[in-house]
Length: 186
Image 1: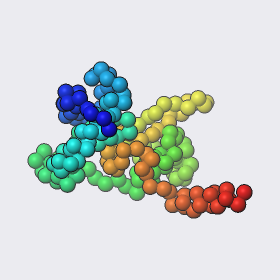
Image 2: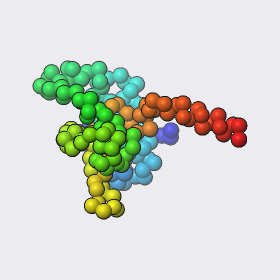
Image 3: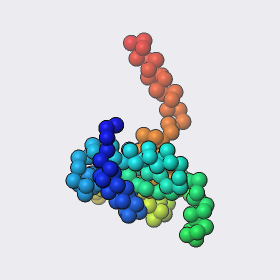
Image 4: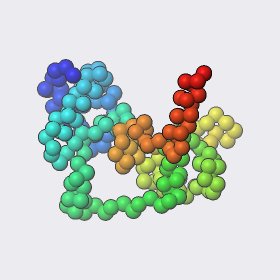
């Protein structure tokens, strides 16, 4: 990485702090009147500086956004002081629906129901309320069904910066090995 302008870095840090929510890289770049590449370099530099400091705050990347948040090790202290209640864990049904959506998005509710074999209207509504999934648009099919996908909040909850970090599905490795073995013999 090149040398980052200290004034721009301080301004980006102030924006991330004041926002309290993920800030899209493009929006940060526009606000600081710099290129997306410069904004990315600044965010990466800030993340590294915070990590080296080993304090109670970190900079995290969530897809195309960046956010300043507390370090997991201090979550209990933050909850106690701020009187936050730990959210209830996801039910088995909610976990299954979330997995189907995360690995296949964007998907319709009908697709999820076909995979699971049961109605999932209530579960989908619950996942939307928890901000783990959201409507991503409509399909150009009769009835124009809604399609769903995961949110930045989903990434934050599962401590990943992109969907590429999701673990492989069971059996996926075996299929990939078979595919590569078939290619070698061809």
